[in-house]
Length: 279
Image 1 (tube, rainbow, N blue to C red):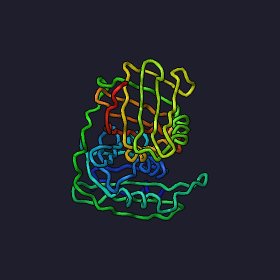
Image 2: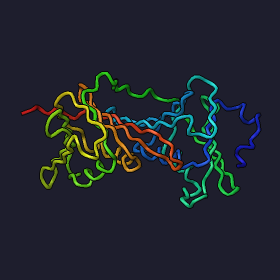
Image 3: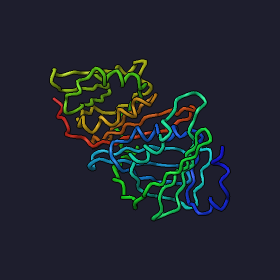
């Protein structure tokens, strides 16, 4: 691949270099969190974490482990910057995002540090395109303080079953109500839309339920407008972990397999709209 022939002198000017033989392995997972214009990139030795937020109520994180990249070089403990995600995705798919077998766009992503652009070298069929995207100083992401020790309820589902539920629930509803309970109804999704109330129940011994760990009855409502962006991640995923903590905050963690069968994660955090009193 021509991109790999760049000289050592070229490498020396960058503090972060990440290369992929297939740019779709980055663009697809970024599409799963692209509901706002800007994204915060945080690179460490472990890989890339890309964060998008909405009005301090919703946060999405895409994790791309260092092992996913064919080349991953970072010369500082942590490297952070903010970029226009819409522009980045346009650049990553500049060759049209071909799905033809054997035809891939190779990517080499380089960053020289504060004040410098994010430079993308994209190559397909011997043609190399260079894109330079302005970077900004990253804002500090919101800390939702969602830690596993405070998780009260957790289920892991096959994504297909959640896609089915979303297709049957009334999306005109302003909220999605989630009930998790050690006893019936176990795991219930409810909407309250133009066509009336709708419930979708999952028995805890359902084939679609991989894990069921509920310690107490919890019913919370979440704004549908905040949850809708997460359906992009749902569409790409094969499994989803649904967790709530003692405050009713929601974590949706999606397991996504890329074109090469490697696993990445996308996580959404959402704060509750209101707590529902148990009757």
